[in-house]
Length: 595
Image (cartoon, rainbow, N blue to C red; front, side, top):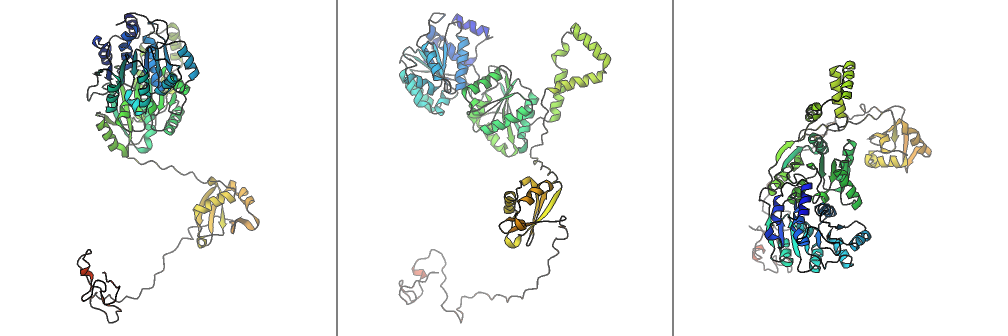
Protein backbone atom coordinates (compact mmCIF):
# COMPACT_ATOMS: atom_id res chain seq x y z
CA UNK A 1 0.00 0.00 0.00
CA UNK A 2 1.15 3.56 -0.73
CA UNK A 3 2.73 4.96 2.48
CA UNK A 4 0.79 8.24 2.50
CA UNK A 5 -2.52 6.39 2.33
CA UNK A 6 -1.41 3.85 4.92
CA UNK A 7 -0.58 6.74 7.27
CA UNK A 8 -4.04 8.29 6.76
CA UNK A 9 -5.72 4.95 7.55
CA UNK A 10 -3.65 4.51 10.72
CA UNK A 11 -4.56 7.99 11.92
CA UNK A 12 -8.23 7.13 11.43
CA UNK A 13 -7.87 3.96 13.51
CA UNK A 14 -8.01 1.42 10.67
CA UNK A 15 -6.31 -1.65 12.12
CA UNK A 16 -7.63 -3.98 9.43
CA UNK A 17 -9.43 -3.50 6.14
CA UNK A 18 -13.01 -4.63 5.57
CA UNK A 19 -13.79 -7.49 3.24
CA UNK A 20 -14.63 -5.29 0.26
CA UNK A 21 -11.53 -3.14 0.83
CA UNK A 22 -9.32 -6.23 0.87
CA UNK A 23 -10.96 -7.52 -2.31
CA UNK A 24 -10.60 -4.37 -4.45
CA UNK A 25 -7.00 -3.70 -3.34
CA UNK A 26 -5.81 -7.11 -4.49
CA UNK A 27 -2.57 -6.45 -6.43
CA UNK A 28 -3.79 -8.68 -9.24
CA UNK A 29 -6.65 -6.21 -9.89
CA UNK A 30 -4.52 -3.04 -9.92
CA UNK A 31 -5.13 -2.40 -13.65
CA UNK A 32 -8.52 -4.12 -14.10
CA UNK A 33 -11.99 -2.68 -14.49
CA UNK A 34 -14.17 -3.78 -11.58
CA UNK A 35 -17.88 -4.53 -11.09
CA UNK A 36 -18.29 -4.68 -7.32
CA UNK A 37 -21.28 -5.79 -5.22
CA UNK A 38 -21.10 -4.99 -1.51
CA UNK A 39 -23.67 -4.32 1.17
CA UNK A 40 -24.29 -0.87 2.62
CA UNK A 41 -21.88 0.18 5.36
CA UNK A 42 -19.05 -2.11 4.26
CA UNK A 43 -16.53 0.70 3.63
CA UNK A 44 -16.97 0.99 -0.14
CA UNK A 45 -15.83 4.63 -0.32
CA UNK A 46 -12.45 3.95 1.28
CA UNK A 47 -12.36 0.77 -0.80
CA UNK A 48 -12.53 2.44 -4.19
CA UNK A 49 -10.30 5.25 -2.89
CA UNK A 50 -7.61 2.62 -2.26
CA UNK A 51 -8.41 0.78 -5.49
CA UNK A 52 -7.63 3.78 -7.74
CA UNK A 53 -4.59 4.94 -5.74
CA UNK A 54 -2.07 3.05 -7.88
CA UNK A 55 -3.76 4.34 -11.03
CA UNK A 56 -3.46 7.97 -9.87
CA UNK A 57 -0.09 7.92 -8.08
CA UNK A 58 1.85 5.19 -9.82
CA UNK A 59 5.04 4.64 -7.81
CA UNK A 60 4.95 8.14 -6.27
CA UNK A 61 3.78 8.96 -2.76
CA UNK A 62 2.38 12.38 -3.62
CA UNK A 63 0.46 13.87 -6.51
CA UNK A 64 1.73 16.76 -8.59
CA UNK A 65 0.17 20.24 -8.77
CA UNK A 66 -3.60 20.15 -9.44
CA UNK A 67 -4.61 20.61 -13.08
CA UNK A 68 -7.12 18.66 -15.17
CA UNK A 69 -8.73 15.97 -12.95
CA UNK A 70 -7.30 12.47 -12.90
CA UNK A 71 -10.35 10.72 -11.39
CA UNK A 72 -14.11 11.24 -11.62
CA UNK A 73 -16.47 9.82 -8.98
CA UNK A 74 -20.21 9.89 -9.77
CA UNK A 75 -22.83 9.46 -7.01
CA UNK A 76 -26.66 9.48 -7.21
CA UNK A 77 -27.42 12.04 -4.46
CA UNK A 78 -25.94 15.25 -3.17
CA UNK A 79 -25.51 13.87 0.35
CA UNK A 80 -23.61 10.82 -0.89
CA UNK A 81 -21.40 12.95 -3.15
CA UNK A 82 -20.46 15.24 -0.25
CA UNK A 83 -19.76 12.25 1.96
CA UNK A 84 -17.50 10.72 -0.70
CA UNK A 85 -15.65 14.01 -1.03
CA UNK A 86 -15.00 14.13 2.74
CA UNK A 87 -13.78 10.51 2.82
CA UNK A 88 -11.42 10.92 -0.14
CA UNK A 89 -10.15 14.25 1.23
CA UNK A 90 -8.78 12.71 4.45
CA UNK A 91 -7.61 9.55 2.68
CA UNK A 92 -5.54 11.50 0.13
CA UNK A 93 -4.62 14.46 2.39
CA UNK A 94 -0.97 13.39 2.84
CA UNK A 95 -0.75 12.63 -0.88
CA UNK A 96 -1.49 16.28 -1.63
CA UNK A 97 -4.76 15.61 -3.46
CA UNK A 98 -7.29 18.34 -4.14
CA UNK A 99 -10.84 16.93 -4.13
CA UNK A 100 -13.59 19.12 -5.65
CA UNK A 101 -17.35 18.54 -5.56
CA UNK A 102 -19.89 19.45 -8.27
CA UNK A 103 -23.44 18.82 -7.09
CA UNK A 104 -26.91 20.11 -7.80
CA UNK A 105 -28.20 22.87 -5.54
CA UNK A 106 -24.81 24.56 -5.14
CA UNK A 107 -23.49 27.70 -6.86
CA UNK A 108 -22.23 26.69 -10.34
CA UNK A 109 -19.97 29.76 -10.51
CA UNK A 110 -18.11 28.72 -7.36
CA UNK A 111 -17.74 25.21 -8.76
CA UNK A 112 -16.42 26.56 -12.07
CA UNK A 113 -13.82 28.66 -10.26
CA UNK A 114 -12.78 25.62 -8.20
CA UNK A 115 -12.34 23.57 -11.38
CA UNK A 116 -10.34 26.38 -12.98
CA UNK A 117 -7.93 26.28 -10.04
CA UNK A 118 -7.30 22.61 -10.76
CA UNK A 119 -8.28 19.33 -9.09
CA UNK A 120 -7.02 15.79 -8.82
CA UNK A 121 -10.38 14.15 -8.03
CA UNK A 122 -13.85 15.48 -8.92
CA UNK A 123 -16.91 14.08 -7.11
CA UNK A 124 -20.42 14.97 -8.21
CA UNK A 125 -23.95 14.09 -9.22
CA UNK A 126 -24.71 13.08 -12.85
CA UNK A 127 -26.73 16.11 -13.94
CA UNK A 128 -24.34 18.75 -12.58
CA UNK A 129 -21.23 16.94 -13.88
CA UNK A 130 -22.68 16.70 -17.37
CA UNK A 131 -23.60 20.37 -17.25
CA UNK A 132 -19.98 21.33 -16.44
CA UNK A 133 -18.67 19.07 -19.21
CA UNK A 134 -20.96 20.57 -21.86
CA UNK A 135 -19.97 24.10 -20.74
CA UNK A 136 -16.28 23.14 -21.02
CA UNK A 137 -15.76 23.76 -17.30
CA UNK A 138 -14.73 20.13 -16.68
CA UNK A 139 -11.98 18.64 -18.85
CA UNK A 140 -11.94 14.82 -19.04
CA UNK A 141 -8.91 14.41 -21.30
CA UNK A 142 -6.57 13.36 -18.43
CA UNK A 143 -9.06 11.10 -16.63
CA UNK A 144 -7.41 7.84 -15.55
CA UNK A 145 -10.27 6.35 -13.48
CA UNK A 146 -14.06 6.72 -13.29
CA UNK A 147 -16.01 5.38 -10.30
CA UNK A 148 -19.79 4.89 -10.38
CA UNK A 149 -20.99 4.67 -6.77
CA UNK A 150 -24.48 3.18 -6.18
CA UNK A 151 -24.81 2.56 -9.92
CA UNK A 152 -28.12 0.72 -9.56
CA UNK A 153 -29.65 3.73 -7.79
CA UNK A 154 -28.46 6.09 -10.54
CA UNK A 155 -30.18 3.97 -13.18
CA UNK A 156 -33.36 3.82 -11.07
CA UNK A 157 -33.33 7.63 -10.85
CA UNK A 158 -33.13 7.97 -14.65
CA UNK A 159 -29.48 9.02 -15.02
CA UNK A 160 -28.57 6.42 -17.63
CA UNK A 161 -28.26 8.95 -20.46
CA UNK A 162 -26.01 11.21 -18.35
CA UNK A 163 -23.78 8.27 -17.36
CA UNK A 164 -23.44 7.09 -20.94
CA UNK A 165 -22.55 10.62 -22.02
CA UNK A 166 -19.73 10.95 -19.45
CA UNK A 167 -18.39 7.45 -20.05
CA UNK A 168 -18.35 8.20 -23.76
CA UNK A 169 -16.50 11.51 -23.27
CA UNK A 170 -13.75 10.02 -21.07
CA UNK A 171 -10.60 8.50 -22.59
CA UNK A 172 -10.96 4.88 -23.67
CA UNK A 173 -7.82 3.96 -21.70
CA UNK A 174 -9.29 4.87 -18.29
CA UNK A 175 -10.25 2.34 -15.62
CA UNK A 176 -13.97 2.05 -14.84
CA UNK A 177 -15.11 0.84 -11.42
CA UNK A 178 -18.81 0.25 -10.80
CA UNK A 179 -20.07 -0.23 -7.26
CA UNK A 180 -23.64 -1.45 -6.87
CA UNK A 181 -25.66 -3.12 -4.12
CA UNK A 182 -27.19 -5.40 -6.76
CA UNK A 183 -26.33 -6.18 -10.37
CA UNK A 184 -29.60 -6.13 -12.34
CA UNK A 185 -29.56 -6.66 -16.14
CA UNK A 186 -29.31 -2.90 -16.78
CA UNK A 187 -26.06 -2.68 -14.76
CA UNK A 188 -24.65 -5.76 -16.48
CA UNK A 189 -25.44 -4.23 -19.88
CA UNK A 190 -23.78 -0.93 -18.91
CA UNK A 191 -20.70 -2.78 -17.69
CA UNK A 192 -20.48 -4.82 -20.89
CA UNK A 193 -20.68 -1.68 -23.03
CA UNK A 194 -18.30 0.63 -21.13
CA UNK A 195 -15.92 -1.67 -19.24
CA UNK A 196 -13.08 -3.77 -20.59
CA UNK A 197 -13.24 -7.37 -19.37
CA UNK A 198 -14.50 -6.25 -15.97
CA UNK A 199 -13.67 -8.46 -13.01
CA UNK A 200 -16.72 -9.32 -10.94
CA UNK A 201 -16.11 -8.79 -7.20
CA UNK A 202 -18.82 -9.61 -4.66
CA UNK A 203 -18.72 -9.64 -0.88
CA UNK A 204 -22.47 -10.08 -0.37
CA UNK A 205 -23.22 -13.52 1.04
CA UNK A 206 -26.76 -14.60 0.23
CA UNK A 207 -29.00 -14.36 3.30
CA UNK A 208 -26.43 -12.45 5.40
CA UNK A 209 -27.44 -8.87 4.63
CA UNK A 210 -26.70 -6.55 7.54
CA UNK A 211 -25.56 -9.14 10.04
CA UNK A 212 -24.74 -6.40 12.55
CA UNK A 213 -28.33 -5.09 12.60
CA UNK A 214 -30.97 -6.39 15.01
CA UNK A 215 -34.35 -6.12 13.27
CA UNK A 216 -37.47 -5.53 15.35
CA UNK A 217 -41.14 -5.34 14.44
CA UNK A 218 -42.90 -3.15 16.99
CA UNK A 219 -46.63 -3.90 17.03
CA UNK A 220 -48.78 -0.97 18.13
CA UNK A 221 -52.37 0.20 18.11
CA UNK A 222 -53.03 2.47 15.13
CA UNK A 223 -53.48 5.57 17.32
CA UNK A 224 -50.23 4.95 19.24
CA UNK A 225 -47.69 5.09 16.39
CA UNK A 226 -46.20 8.44 17.40
CA UNK A 227 -46.21 7.53 21.10
CA UNK A 228 -44.31 4.34 20.25
CA UNK A 229 -41.66 6.34 18.35
CA UNK A 230 -41.12 8.65 21.33
CA UNK A 231 -40.85 5.71 23.74
CA UNK A 232 -38.39 3.85 21.47
CA UNK A 233 -36.14 6.91 21.32
CA UNK A 234 -36.28 7.24 25.12
CA UNK A 235 -35.79 3.53 25.78
CA UNK A 236 -32.76 2.98 23.55
CA UNK A 237 -31.24 6.40 24.28
CA UNK A 238 -29.09 6.15 21.13
CA UNK A 239 -26.42 8.84 20.64
CA UNK A 240 -27.80 9.33 17.11
CA UNK A 241 -31.06 8.04 15.62
CA UNK A 242 -32.92 8.46 12.36
CA UNK A 243 -36.69 8.18 11.90
CA UNK A 244 -37.92 7.43 8.36
CA UNK A 245 -41.33 8.53 7.05
CA UNK A 246 -42.85 8.19 3.59
CA UNK A 247 -44.07 11.78 3.08
CA UNK A 248 -42.82 15.29 3.76
CA UNK A 249 -45.99 16.07 5.73
CA UNK A 250 -45.31 13.18 8.10
CA UNK A 251 -41.70 14.32 8.49
CA UNK A 252 -42.84 17.82 9.49
CA UNK A 253 -45.46 16.52 11.95
CA UNK A 254 -43.10 14.04 13.63
CA UNK A 255 -40.33 16.63 13.91
CA UNK A 256 -42.72 19.07 15.59
CA UNK A 257 -43.87 16.44 18.09
CA UNK A 258 -40.32 15.40 18.96
CA UNK A 259 -39.22 19.00 19.34
CA UNK A 260 -42.13 19.56 21.75
CA UNK A 261 -40.76 16.65 23.81
CA UNK A 262 -37.41 18.47 24.17
CA UNK A 263 -35.65 16.10 21.76
CA UNK A 264 -32.98 17.85 19.63
CA UNK A 265 -34.24 17.07 16.12
CA UNK A 266 -33.53 18.03 12.50
CA UNK A 267 -35.34 17.11 9.28
CA UNK A 268 -34.15 15.91 5.90
CA UNK A 269 -36.42 15.80 2.83
CA UNK A 270 -36.42 16.66 -0.87
CA UNK A 271 -37.97 20.09 -0.36
CA UNK A 272 -34.93 21.40 1.54
CA UNK A 273 -32.15 23.29 -0.21
CA UNK A 274 -28.65 21.85 -0.29
CA UNK A 275 -27.50 24.31 2.38
CA UNK A 276 -30.36 23.28 4.66
CA UNK A 277 -29.53 19.59 4.17
CA UNK A 278 -25.87 20.19 4.88
CA UNK A 279 -26.63 22.13 8.05
CA UNK A 280 -28.99 19.39 9.27
CA UNK A 281 -26.37 16.66 8.75
CA UNK A 282 -23.66 18.78 10.36
CA UNK A 283 -25.88 19.27 13.41
CA UNK A 284 -26.13 15.47 13.70
CA UNK A 285 -22.39 15.03 13.32
CA UNK A 286 -21.36 17.59 15.91
CA UNK A 287 -23.98 16.52 18.47
CA UNK A 288 -26.28 19.55 18.38
CA UNK A 289 -29.07 17.20 17.21
CA UNK A 290 -29.62 13.57 18.13
CA UNK A 291 -32.64 12.66 15.99
CA UNK A 292 -33.07 13.11 12.24
CA UNK A 293 -36.57 12.70 10.77
CA UNK A 294 -36.25 12.03 7.05
CA UNK A 295 -37.84 10.72 3.89
CA UNK A 296 -36.09 8.11 1.75
CA UNK A 297 -33.79 10.85 0.43
CA UNK A 298 -31.61 9.88 3.42
CA UNK A 299 -31.86 6.13 2.82
CA UNK A 300 -28.67 6.00 0.75
CA UNK A 301 -25.29 7.56 1.26
CA UNK A 302 -25.86 9.05 4.72
CA UNK A 303 -23.14 8.01 7.14
CA UNK A 304 -23.72 9.48 10.59
CA UNK A 305 -21.42 8.75 13.53
CA UNK A 306 -22.74 6.50 16.28
CA UNK A 307 -26.06 5.96 14.49
CA UNK A 308 -27.32 3.07 16.62
CA UNK A 309 -31.07 3.25 15.95
CA UNK A 310 -33.23 3.40 12.81
CA UNK A 311 -37.01 3.69 13.24
CA UNK A 312 -39.42 3.14 10.34
CA UNK A 313 -42.35 5.37 11.31
CA UNK A 314 -44.00 4.37 8.03
CA UNK A 315 -43.40 0.93 6.57
CA UNK A 316 -40.94 0.89 3.64
CA UNK A 317 -42.58 0.53 0.24
CA UNK A 318 -40.30 -2.34 -0.87
CA UNK A 319 -37.42 -4.55 0.26
CA UNK A 320 -34.76 -2.26 -1.24
CA UNK A 321 -36.03 0.68 0.80
CA UNK A 322 -36.06 -1.49 3.94
CA UNK A 323 -32.47 -2.63 3.45
CA UNK A 324 -31.10 0.79 2.53
CA UNK A 325 -32.91 2.54 5.38
CA UNK A 326 -31.70 -0.05 7.85
CA UNK A 327 -28.19 0.13 6.39
CA UNK A 328 -27.69 3.57 7.94
CA UNK A 329 -26.88 1.70 11.16
CA UNK A 330 -24.73 -1.36 11.81
CA UNK A 331 -21.89 0.10 9.72
CA UNK A 332 -18.24 -0.91 9.76
CA UNK A 333 -18.71 -3.53 12.48
CA UNK A 334 -20.81 -1.36 14.80
CA UNK A 335 -24.06 -2.90 16.09
CA UNK A 336 -27.40 -1.25 15.42
CA UNK A 337 -31.17 -1.66 15.73
CA UNK A 338 -33.75 -1.29 12.95
CA UNK A 339 -37.25 -1.00 14.45
CA UNK A 340 -40.27 -1.05 12.14
CA UNK A 341 -43.51 0.38 13.59
CA UNK A 342 -46.41 -1.84 12.48
CA UNK A 343 -50.04 -0.93 13.27
CA UNK A 344 -52.57 -3.70 13.87
CA UNK A 345 -53.88 -3.92 10.31
CA UNK A 346 -50.43 -4.04 8.69
CA UNK A 347 -48.97 -7.16 10.32
CA UNK A 348 -49.48 -9.35 7.25
CA UNK A 349 -47.87 -6.75 5.02
CA UNK A 350 -44.90 -6.53 7.38
CA UNK A 351 -44.51 -10.32 7.38
CA UNK A 352 -44.43 -10.41 3.57
CA UNK A 353 -41.92 -7.56 3.41
CA UNK A 354 -39.54 -9.30 5.81
CA UNK A 355 -39.94 -12.61 3.99
CA UNK A 356 -39.09 -11.06 0.62
CA UNK A 357 -36.07 -9.30 2.17
CA UNK A 358 -34.95 -12.60 3.79
CA UNK A 359 -34.81 -10.96 7.23
CA UNK A 360 -35.51 -12.62 10.55
CA UNK A 361 -36.99 -10.03 12.90
CA UNK A 362 -38.04 -10.05 16.54
CA UNK A 363 -41.75 -9.27 16.99
CA UNK A 364 -42.23 -7.15 20.06
CA UNK A 365 -44.25 -4.28 21.57
CA UNK A 366 -43.43 -0.66 22.26
CA UNK A 367 -41.72 0.05 25.61
CA UNK A 368 -44.17 1.20 28.26
CA UNK A 369 -43.74 4.21 30.50
CA UNK A 370 -42.96 1.87 33.40
CA UNK A 371 -40.22 0.13 31.37
CA UNK A 372 -38.58 3.46 30.56
CA UNK A 373 -38.73 4.85 34.10
CA UNK A 374 -37.24 1.64 35.48
CA UNK A 375 -34.46 1.81 32.90
CA UNK A 376 -33.77 5.42 33.94
CA UNK A 377 -33.07 4.23 37.46
CA UNK A 378 -30.79 1.44 36.24
CA UNK A 379 -28.80 3.81 34.04
CA UNK A 380 -28.44 6.28 36.90
CA UNK A 381 -27.18 3.60 39.29
CA UNK A 382 -24.67 2.21 36.77
CA UNK A 383 -23.31 5.58 35.64
CA UNK A 384 -19.45 5.61 35.70
CA UNK A 385 -19.53 8.87 37.68
CA UNK A 386 -20.24 6.87 40.84
CA UNK A 387 -16.75 5.37 40.65
CA UNK A 388 -14.92 8.57 39.74
CA UNK A 389 -12.53 9.92 42.43
CA UNK A 390 -13.91 12.78 44.52
CA UNK A 391 -12.16 16.13 44.47
CA UNK A 392 -11.59 18.20 47.60
CA UNK A 393 -14.26 20.72 46.62
CA UNK A 394 -16.77 17.96 45.88
CA UNK A 395 -16.05 16.33 49.25
CA UNK A 396 -16.68 19.62 51.04
CA UNK A 397 -19.99 20.10 49.23
CA UNK A 398 -21.03 16.49 49.94
CA UNK A 399 -20.41 16.98 53.68
CA UNK A 400 -22.47 20.16 53.71
CA UNK A 401 -25.25 18.46 51.75
CA UNK A 402 -25.34 15.47 54.11
CA UNK A 403 -25.63 17.85 57.07
CA UNK A 404 -28.58 19.72 55.55
CA UNK A 405 -30.53 16.90 53.86
CA UNK A 406 -31.48 13.34 54.61
CA UNK A 407 -30.13 10.54 52.41
CA UNK A 408 -33.65 9.94 51.07
CA UNK A 409 -34.03 13.60 50.03
CA UNK A 410 -30.63 13.56 48.31
CA UNK A 411 -31.49 10.37 46.42
CA UNK A 412 -34.87 11.80 45.35
CA UNK A 413 -33.25 15.03 44.11
CA UNK A 414 -30.59 13.01 42.28
CA UNK A 415 -33.24 11.03 40.37
CA UNK A 416 -35.30 14.13 39.60
CA UNK A 417 -32.29 16.02 38.31
CA UNK A 418 -31.37 13.05 36.11
CA UNK A 419 -34.85 12.94 34.57
CA UNK A 420 -35.18 16.72 34.26
CA UNK A 421 -33.39 16.78 30.91
CA UNK A 422 -35.26 13.77 29.51
CA UNK A 423 -38.57 13.63 27.67
CA UNK A 424 -41.43 12.11 29.67
CA UNK A 425 -42.45 8.70 28.30
CA UNK A 426 -45.86 8.25 26.70
CA UNK A 427 -48.65 5.88 27.68
CA UNK A 428 -49.15 3.22 25.00
CA UNK A 429 -52.04 0.80 24.67
CA UNK A 430 -51.86 -2.85 23.74
CA UNK A 431 -52.23 -3.61 20.00
CA UNK A 432 -55.88 -3.96 19.01
CA UNK A 433 -57.06 -1.41 21.56
CA UNK A 434 -59.51 1.12 20.18
CA UNK A 435 -58.58 4.79 20.35
CA UNK A 436 -60.10 6.48 23.40
CA UNK A 437 -62.92 8.88 22.54
CA UNK A 438 -62.14 12.41 23.66
CA UNK A 439 -64.51 13.74 26.30
CA UNK A 440 -66.60 16.65 25.13
CA UNK A 441 -66.18 19.74 27.25
CA UNK A 442 -69.37 21.16 28.80
CA UNK A 443 -71.02 23.81 26.61
CA UNK A 444 -71.36 26.27 29.46
CA UNK A 445 -74.04 28.99 30.06
CA UNK A 446 -76.40 29.11 27.08
CA UNK A 447 -79.56 30.70 25.69
CA UNK A 448 -82.14 28.98 23.49
CA UNK A 449 -83.66 30.42 20.31
CA UNK A 450 -86.55 29.24 18.17
CA UNK A 451 -86.29 29.38 14.37
CA UNK A 452 -89.39 29.53 12.15
CA UNK A 453 -88.52 26.46 10.10
CA UNK A 454 -88.85 22.77 10.79
CA UNK A 455 -89.58 19.41 9.26
CA UNK A 456 -92.44 20.96 7.27
CA UNK A 457 -89.86 23.00 5.34
CA UNK A 458 -87.30 20.19 5.25
CA UNK A 459 -85.00 21.89 7.76
CA UNK A 460 -81.77 20.01 8.57
CA UNK A 461 -78.90 20.79 10.94
CA UNK A 462 -76.33 20.45 8.14
CA UNK A 463 -77.64 23.59 6.38
CA UNK A 464 -78.94 25.42 9.44
CA UNK A 465 -75.45 25.41 11.02
CA UNK A 466 -73.68 27.31 8.19
CA UNK A 467 -76.67 29.68 7.90
CA UNK A 468 -76.40 30.56 11.59
CA UNK A 469 -72.66 31.16 11.26
CA UNK A 470 -73.07 33.22 8.11
CA UNK A 471 -76.10 35.32 8.94
CA UNK A 472 -75.90 35.31 12.73
CA UNK A 473 -72.29 36.43 13.13
CA UNK A 474 -71.42 33.17 14.94
CA UNK A 475 -68.64 30.62 15.05
CA UNK A 476 -69.28 26.87 15.27
CA UNK A 477 -67.99 26.79 18.84
CA UNK A 478 -70.82 29.18 19.83
CA UNK A 479 -73.54 26.76 18.68
CA UNK A 480 -74.63 23.90 20.90
CA UNK A 481 -77.59 21.61 20.28
CA UNK A 482 -79.89 21.93 17.26
CA UNK A 483 -83.30 20.27 17.59
CA UNK A 484 -85.49 20.24 14.47
CA UNK A 485 -89.23 20.07 15.38
CA UNK A 486 -92.34 19.70 13.25
CA UNK A 487 -92.63 23.40 12.27
CA UNK A 488 -89.81 25.04 14.26
CA UNK A 489 -86.18 24.44 15.20
CA UNK A 490 -84.66 25.00 18.64
CA UNK A 491 -81.03 26.20 18.74
CA UNK A 492 -78.72 26.51 21.75
CA UNK A 493 -76.23 29.43 21.65
CA UNK A 494 -73.43 30.29 24.03
CA UNK A 495 -74.40 33.15 26.32
CA UNK A 496 -71.36 35.20 25.28
CA UNK A 497 -72.43 35.09 21.61
CA UNK A 498 -76.06 36.21 22.18
CA UNK A 499 -75.49 40.01 21.94
CA UNK A 500 -73.77 39.70 18.58
CA UNK A 501 -76.45 37.31 17.33
CA UNK A 502 -79.27 39.65 18.32
CA UNK A 503 -77.50 42.59 16.66
CA UNK A 504 -77.33 40.67 13.39
CA UNK A 505 -81.10 40.03 13.26
CA UNK A 506 -83.14 42.23 10.97
CA UNK A 507 -86.54 43.79 11.55
CA UNK A 508 -88.97 41.31 13.05
CA UNK A 509 -86.14 38.99 14.01
CA UNK A 510 -85.42 37.94 10.42
CA UNK A 511 -82.27 35.84 10.26
CA UNK A 512 -82.12 35.07 6.54
CA UNK A 513 -84.80 35.20 3.84
CA UNK A 514 -88.04 33.96 5.49
CA UNK A 515 -86.39 32.40 8.57
CA UNK A 516 -86.93 34.34 11.80
CA UNK A 517 -85.43 33.79 15.24
CA UNK A 518 -87.04 34.31 18.64
CA UNK A 519 -85.30 34.15 22.01
CA UNK A 520 -86.88 31.79 24.54
CA UNK A 521 -87.25 32.74 28.18
CA UNK A 522 -86.35 29.27 29.47
CA UNK A 523 -84.68 26.19 28.11
CA UNK A 524 -87.14 23.83 26.39
CA UNK A 525 -88.19 20.68 28.20
CA UNK A 526 -87.39 17.97 25.68
CA UNK A 527 -88.42 15.20 28.05
CA UNK A 528 -92.07 16.27 27.92
CA UNK A 529 -91.95 16.58 24.14
CA UNK A 530 -90.94 12.97 23.56
CA UNK A 531 -93.36 10.98 21.50
CA UNK A 532 -95.63 8.56 23.24
CA UNK A 533 -96.37 5.06 21.96
CA UNK A 534 -97.73 4.87 18.46
CA UNK A 535 -101.50 4.35 18.27
CA UNK A 536 -102.58 0.98 17.03
CA UNK A 537 -103.19 0.91 13.30
CA UNK A 538 -106.58 -0.30 12.10
CA UNK A 539 -106.46 -3.85 10.95
CA UNK A 540 -106.30 -4.27 7.20
CA UNK A 541 -108.94 -6.24 5.41
CA UNK A 542 -107.68 -9.66 4.53
CA UNK A 543 -106.78 -10.08 0.90
CA UNK A 544 -108.31 -12.99 -0.96
CA UNK A 545 -105.96 -15.89 -1.35
CA UNK A 546 -104.23 -16.09 -4.70
CA UNK A 547 -105.39 -18.81 -7.04
CA UNK A 548 -102.77 -21.19 -8.34
CA UNK A 549 -101.41 -20.19 -11.73
CA UNK A 550 -102.70 -22.14 -14.68
CA UNK A 551 -101.50 -22.32 -18.23
CA UNK A 552 -105.08 -22.56 -19.48
CA UNK A 553 -106.40 -19.36 -21.10
CA UNK A 554 -108.71 -17.25 -19.00
CA UNK A 555 -112.14 -16.43 -20.27
CA UNK A 556 -111.39 -12.69 -20.26
CA UNK A 557 -107.89 -13.10 -21.69
CA UNK A 558 -107.40 -10.80 -24.71
CA UNK A 559 -104.81 -13.06 -26.24
CA UNK A 560 -103.78 -16.73 -26.06
CA UNK A 561 -101.05 -17.77 -23.59
CA UNK A 562 -97.40 -17.69 -24.69
CA UNK A 563 -95.83 -20.99 -25.55
CA UNK A 564 -93.27 -22.29 -23.04
CA UNK A 565 -89.76 -23.26 -24.08
CA UNK A 566 -87.33 -25.46 -22.24
CA UNK A 567 -84.25 -23.27 -22.75
CA UNK A 568 -83.57 -19.59 -23.16
CA UNK A 569 -81.44 -20.16 -26.28
CA UNK A 570 -84.01 -22.11 -28.26
CA UNK A 571 -84.01 -22.14 -32.06
CA UNK A 572 -86.28 -19.87 -34.05
CA UNK A 573 -88.43 -22.82 -35.10
CA UNK A 574 -89.11 -23.71 -31.47
CA UNK A 575 -90.33 -20.18 -30.76
CA UNK A 576 -92.93 -20.16 -33.52
CA UNK A 577 -96.47 -21.22 -32.78
CA UNK A 578 -97.94 -24.35 -34.42
CA UNK A 579 -99.20 -23.90 -37.90
CA UNK A 580 -97.47 -20.58 -38.40
CA UNK A 581 -94.59 -19.59 -40.65
CA UNK A 582 -91.46 -17.87 -39.38
CA UNK A 583 -92.60 -14.56 -40.83
CA UNK A 584 -96.11 -14.88 -39.47
CA UNK A 585 -96.41 -17.00 -36.33
CA UNK A 586 -99.97 -15.98 -35.67
CA UNK A 587 -101.19 -15.72 -39.23
CA UNK A 588 -100.61 -11.92 -39.31
CA UNK A 589 -97.65 -10.69 -41.36
CA UNK A 590 -94.86 -9.03 -39.41
CA UNK A 591 -95.83 -10.53 -36.06
CA UNK A 592 -93.29 -12.55 -34.08
CA UNK A 593 -94.09 -14.33 -30.84
CA UNK A 594 -91.05 -14.68 -28.55
CA UNK A 595 -91.48 -15.94 -25.00
